[in-house]
Length: 195
Figure (cartoon, rainbow, N blue to C red):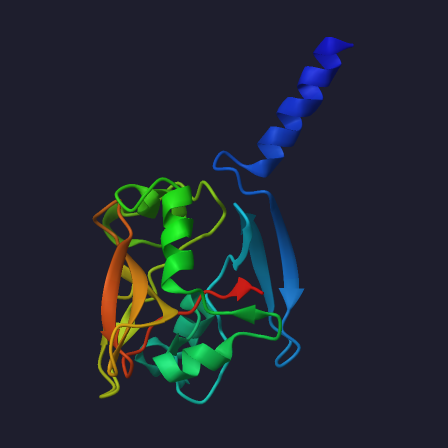
């Protein structure tokens, strides 16, 4: 009887994932019919994919639809604040910090959050939590794009000043998650959290 109980517990823990992700769901954005994976990590439910809703103020990397299919869309900050589907929103800087701390701290969290494929130069991660970070690069209001395959950057709600807002990012060649201060006109990816 005890042996059976231990097998059941081990199977349940394995289903949760090595990093402690509690469950993975799918939801459909009623605005365009796109379906997204979500994952519960600690107390928050996160989208496990970059948002790909074609809001005004968003673009595909290098204006190529194939990049939207792979990485999701890139958004300026004002658009990002309103782009999440009903019941979801952008995370605050405090929520980003709590999330990164929970998955191992800023020095190691990048490796645990990056997808197992898709990063250049063997910069892939272990995806311990099912967050599946992909390097969608970033863009500028001038129409210039950089670093798809090398860098992933995601907006947050917190302003740094009248012109800039805070977000988080990852590079292919480091294990960390960094905080960045980006111009609100720049174009970054979006990960929504459930209200």
